[in-house]
Amino acid sequence: MAPWCSLLPLAPMAHPGKRYLTAALAVLAYGSAFGQHSHSLAQAEWGRNMSGWKLLQHSMEVARTLPVEATIFRQKSPRSNLLMEMQFEQSGDGDARYEILSPLSLRGIINLDDGHVWTNYHPDDQEVTVQPSPRENLEDPNFRIRLAEKNYSVKMEASTEIAGRRAITLIATPKFPEMSSRRYSIDQRKEYLLRMEILDHGHHRTILDTKAISFPDEVPESHFEFTAPRGAHFKTLDAPRPLDRESKQSLGFKPAIPSNLPFGFVVQDRLVGGQKKCEFLSIKLTDGLASATVYQANEKCAAKMAKPYRFDKEVKGVRFWLVGEVPESVWKQLIDAFVKEALKGLESEVIQEKDPDARSEEPHRPSDTLNWEQKKGPKPSKKTASDAEPLDIILSLVEIDA
Image (tube, rainbow, N blue to C red; front, side, top):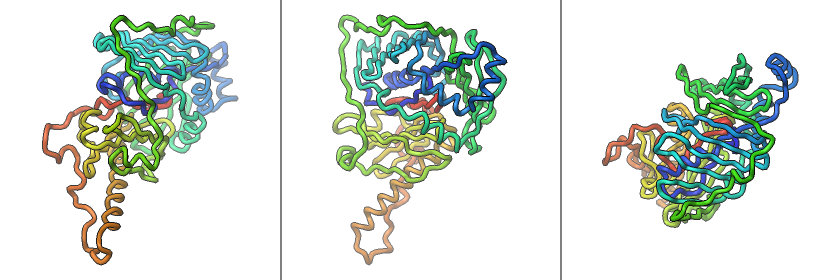
């Protein structure tokens, strides 16, 4: 894996509150080859031969083939203050291994991915989960960059030093003022992402940082082998499947997918996951740099997947919630776009069923749509979308995310 890889909506996890951390591990490493020998020469060559967008894209493209050994810090989720310290290794063939070193509550979680099989070990549960690798269906970097060019501008800032290595710093400024700026610090010799930051209207958050890093000629194959401890139990999970015409029946509701989204976002993927009698729909969105996923599930299944948050919405027993690195104002408008689409579907169904002459009837009542502050029951969590413990955490491209 590499830091530029974004997180795909993944197969169902047995215990979402813990398993979504594995998803965070599945998207971290970045890399590339950028062979300049001095800071001034690197800047000059970059200025003449490579635009900021090309540098970002090139770094994403080579990220999975660069041998790396690193200790990195990563936020548990984009909006969490909890930092995870992790040991990361990657071979030239793209085999990747993550192990959480701290905090103590997460220590020992191991993630292995060879590009085909994704294995996760959780020591507290003595459980090993095995499922198809999300890296088999990574998005096209060219698509992400072309879309990002429509929604952001990029410029070079002063270089910096990270973990003893000189880094070229790029800042992406959104064309929609509601969105956040993003700053990427990329190793000038290897084009490997060392740091990623969010600049959110006066607030600064470091999403990824590098404590120590080296680029060996190769990493021993033995580092990517894993023997489960005695007594560990195994669980095999299926990969999520693409949304199709028959999904409505298995989901138990009609999916709502708007054709137009605000702030330059587009639908990138539509996947159905979960288990029989409790499936969910995940709609992955991106504006090129920021990413988010809107989940849809019936209320019973949703309660097992994620804690409610005050911006979640419910339409006729179907809950809508978002996970991702976007400001709250953007978050609410993205959710509203899906809710409006769901209500249009309800209206269409009612019109088809009722007498053509009875046009004075209302297709739906205001009570058809509820948010968590209007519903009776336990007080909603004050956590943010990214802290709501969903199936997975959606970061983004470089992290080019979100």
